[in-house]
Image 1 (spheres, helix red, strand yellow):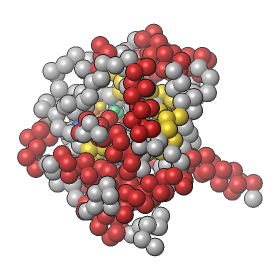
Image 2 (cartoon, rainbow, N blue to C red):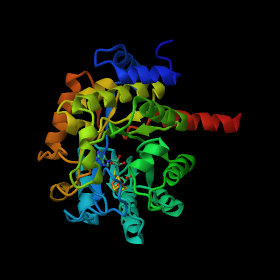
Image 3 (cartoon, protein in one colour):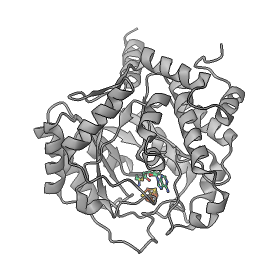
Image 4 (cartoon, helix red, strand yellow):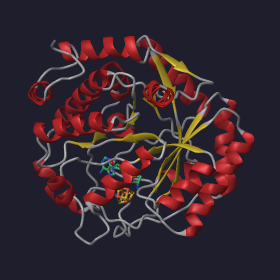
Amino acid sequence: MKFSRNLSRESIIRFLEGGGPDSELFKAAREVLLESAGSSVFLRGIIELSNDCRKNCFYCGLRRDNKTFSRYTIPFNEVINAFDSGYAKGLRSFLLQSGELLGALHIDHVEKILHWVSRNLEGVRMVLSMGELPMESLERLREAGAHRYLLRIETSSRELYERFHPDDGLHEYDDRLRSLQMIRASGWQTGTGVLIGLPGQTAENLADDLLFMKELDIDMCGMGPYLEHEQTPLWNRRSELRHWEERELLTLRMISLLRILLPTANIAATTALQTLDPEGLEKGLMAGANVVMPNLTPMKYRKDYNLYQGKVHVEDTLDEVLKILENRCSAIGRDVELGNPGDPLHFSNRIKEQVGDWTE
Ligand code: SAH
Ligand code: SF4
């Protein structure tokens, strides 16, 4: 069958190389989405908690050696105020994202926020995306009430990983992989993702990324186009990049293929995709995504959280943002699910299977 869950590497490569939004691939992904995960769009309110980072990834504007902007960490009260207003509007899942910081102060800060959420906001799922943390920090944060962890592998190719990270002992492919496997094995709802359209990245590399995510049997995925940033080493290679329209098409094909490979996973229409194209939201959802992440970061910090250039900075209030989102989704036949934490069906199913295994 052409679109079975067991698509071969060869056919994945073929689909990555051609076909637009009207192609069979996109239609099949939409059908799989409706049959498996449904038409709902789930929201995660994101707070960009700190732009400080100990790492130096060649693609990222927040890298340690970029001294052209000021570093911040949002204080406790401002974070919980933002969560409180999000909760009042029906958001039931929040994502805390930051650079990679291992210090006790940072972990204590996140733990305190999680404790507050557990005590004050009923029925909320907290998601963390804070890089490679040691096991004991992860355990503390899980005990404090976090449920989901997002750690992008960035690229499943060791060779590409090494090309886009410094060779300084801090950026090891094996460490990243082990960290992701440890998160998956210790009971988190697990998300990963990749950068799409890096210089020199081939359709074969991207096909391997998809098979990597299927093999790891992830619950959530956030993958988006690579976007340039002037204050990074990769800026020098921008002439080698695919045109933005091609990077967008590749991203959409990746979303559709992953939807077919992992029908019940939660897949995000990422901010990077929406930065590339004002219609990126609709296109991502039509390709098979079912998660959108409205930004709850207080306005004064937003200009300093630039992973890449040109990030959309909307000035609208949360009320306006949600209204616009609802309208844009309903225009393509999709419903925003407020009041629902949107657990990935993929996770519930695999937990059921495990319980089944133990009781048989
Ligand atoms: N520091 C953490 C989480 C924050 S960064 C971590 O690295 O895991 C979140 C994601 O931003 C990264 O995983 C990376 O995939 C993405 N990112 C960084 N630079 C980017 C760029 N130039 N274009 C697109 N995405 C980028
Ligand atoms: Fe730091 Fe994450 Fe950016 Fe790498 S991608 S420099 S770890 S914020």
